Length: 386
Image (cartoon, rainbow, N blue to C red; front, top):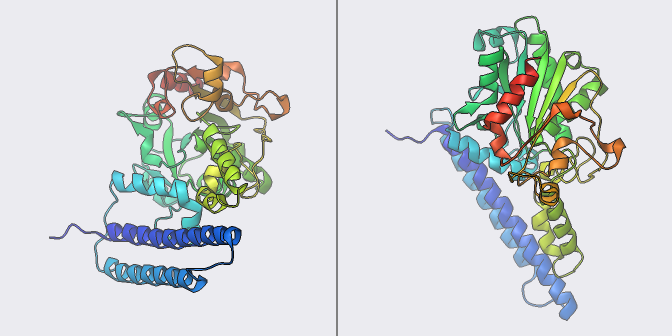
């Protein structure tokens, strides 16, 4: 019996569309470079615009035909639960090109939803009661970071959510979302989802806690801003917000990418290659300054404060065993500098002002090591037991 399932074909459709889009994009890049050189060297000669147009048309038609054939095939195949490897691959592609996937209706685009054990939850009271028979009055929502998914909370046999359920009686649920979309867009949708969750929770809801890893912390902060504007009820139930390696004031890798893109645009010969850098997702560009609000392409260094009444905690990681200010300031955990992860800024008006007793620096720890480090979980348990 064939092991080919509908989800395999759906993924192939998505990657096929991306391949066609990439072919068209590269053709435009080469055409732009060609005509830049010709303008500098003399009147355009050789390949005409009609040739490039033909290549783009051929790629578009081939992509549509491939997509139509696979769509017809998928309709005849049985469904199955995607494997963790399939989900990881899709999450990575969403992180890099997620806004493009969503804008073009690509089947690889991940819809936002709440999940448990990798299965989507229907946010209706009866369905939640059936899916979570042991639901308690203190739900804990865990929000993953860029290019990952909710399954990545389990690392080296440990899951902060499951451990907090076991030790402190929390009810963990996990946000699954397209991390390539703008943080503000994901935040607004997350806020609306939490409003529905609070209204439909199967038992009286006493309090709500959120833990965000990396970009997940920015999405949580953005959701709070959206909830304030919309006057959502769930915000009154939010008691604690924990950040694990969140780039509140940006990540150097994205800042370097932005500088490189600007340098390429400064030269007419290299300007066409700046399109390759610009192709990265809006979610990635939001990491330049840790943007939680604003329009795409408009990064801001202004920090949005967390409303009073919410206890905020921050855990940062550094790669070294001992404090080294220069390394911690520039490298931190390999992705996020120490000051950025702690929400500290030399200008007080931009600082998140998280009290020292609500901060932890985990040394000799990587960005993803925060998800499994025993020291980190011990501190989470201590803070959330209060």
